[in-house]
Image (cartoon, rainbow, N blue to C red):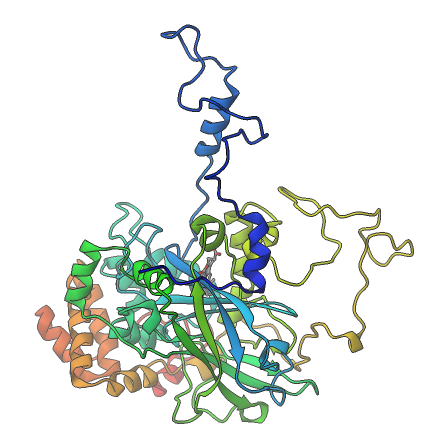
Length: 536
Ligand code: HEM
């Protein structure tokens, strides 16, 4: 069949001047000099040594030698696509964000799906969470919704993230196993980290083995804020609901597919778009009025908790359609830089300590991964609106800023932009009142680690529960250190005694009767473990 037409949008049009197809052209060097032999190096005589003079050889080889950039420190393996987003109804009562208010606007998007733990060449169907990152190129600048396909996370505080990832990644001596959680360091950390109990239930469930990227939900995970024109804020949780429904494969299928086609999800997404079978999701929001902040049994700032849809329904407010494959994997999918700190007026942050830490991490890593401070000038990262500020210079600067003034305040004009007046729009941080001393201790409102893990397990059908038991038995069966297996059974028994018993049976060991509380890094140094005990 003929490939479907790949639609243009305001973003792909801006990419066009940067693209090239050379099939009708004659070959040149990077400095434009025509080449008539790039297959034989210049030598002293036809059997003689190669000559340093050979600029054609040197340039070709040097560029090749420098082709690789560092892969992402997490989410290294991914697949991207272009598309559009349209809101169904103006959301003005909740947010002033322009792209959520004008039902006529088709906001261009670039989406990247990913696994978390594996390296760039690992298999798509590893048991893992999946990234679901969306860059909206809005008329007010880029808004990135950098989410996952699981609504909660392993840890409550960003400062633990390097520990989590060191435990998840292949073990540092042997670099094994690739892209799988079945190993001692991972379960060692998890079994010592009771706050991961809820996420672990999801990761051991069918949700961690999606049938297709087109059949995954997405979640912003953190609680964010919407701000309306009057400056009134509401809390918001973001969701993506796939119109094809949520589907998974079974573990033995996943293992077979991984062996036969490690590109299974990448191929599925590419082929669907190429054949005009455009994947679609609805954007959903759960809205919590500011005054309901303390209405729940859990803390809205705790990313190991979700808000049950029975308590706060998900309203579907718009549709995302992916309708165009990238032209070049490196230029687009690899160089795209997502960051939940890329916000537009009408969307703001909360004090979730995981969210707050992420605000630092993404730009920091991209400065390294994309080679310096000018990575927002890479075509895929540029907003569709123009950029004006006093930032200058640095490696690979593309913009040629004219004028002698690159500072403010100034009285000379020439070259420097003016700041917007409040009446001209612009981003104003929500003026949340903070009245506190500096503390490292975790809030006690973050201490219940097991209720929602249990809620999730109990929400599963019997076959799904069996899959969780099988997954835990398989994964823990690969753990060599018996004490880690036992400690993990202790955690499982705090979630569900039946679940722990079944996994223990499969592992041929017994559930610890009185599970020793793991070293709990959530208890403040001066905290009383008894407080913690009482909330389990
Ligand atoms: C990628 C850090 C938690 C979703 C990344 C990257 C870093 C990072 C450094 C690589 C970015 C790049 O090289 O461009 C962190 C830290 C976290 C955290 C420090 C917690 C403290 C999360 C959570 C989610 C998430 C909770 C989901 C809600 C993603 C996604 C990507 C990513 C989807 C891949 C983006 C892409 O496709 O390029 N993260 N992350 N991360 N992270 Fe996180």
